[in-house]
Length: 331
Image (cartoon, rainbow, N blue to C red):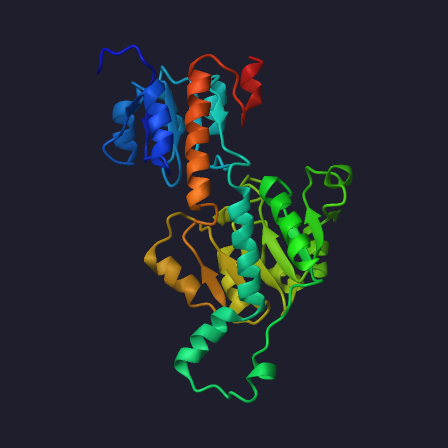
């Protein structure tokens, strides 16, 4: 162990942008495990004053128990399902996240996928390579569905859901419905109309966009019954966490023609196996991307530098800018 008095920050993976690591290295010593295996993290976590991580690495209760110096845990994005938050809270360790750090690229991904799915671009791309299309009848036989003036249902009206609502309304003059038990109509204002149930949201929408966190209450939230309500012309875009939508139900609904299409950026578990990815990709009109909706050249730098500054601020005795477990401040 080095004799330096500077705080030590454990990076399980490199930050998304080198500028973030430069900022972190200016105020702390960076230490790294040999791999993302729990045993390798355990070998060095005892030296760490802070841990910065992103999925698929996990910071379990057992690892937290082996880190007596730990004063902060930081995650790269808004989700904290990679951290045992109750274990950290029990130790009085603040868990920082970057909620609101990359809402625009996720909203752009969702809007782009809506267009691709409703306009049948994925299907047309595949068919054009495999068969001689009837060129005369294609404008009617293969026509897609415009998003302008349609209804988009949003599950979760947090930072990302709000960005999506604003962008969808501006781009498509879309009507926005929202299901979020934690946000009342007064807080939604003119941005969206609050609905009382997922069933109502699916029944009234042409498109369903999932942007809620993965919690015990949201695991398996979207099931086949909801997809059936969305209907044969409905599209679902999912960039939240894999466990929120039942994958088997989604695949079954697509094979049965109960919805038009889907775009999925998240999986359960992550990373998905090749077999899991192939099973999903084999479903008709299903687009899959590797949990990258929030990743852009711009967002990578914003998230990395934001995390670095937040960690150094807390290690220097400052109050966290964003805190997942605010109860640690009152203990």
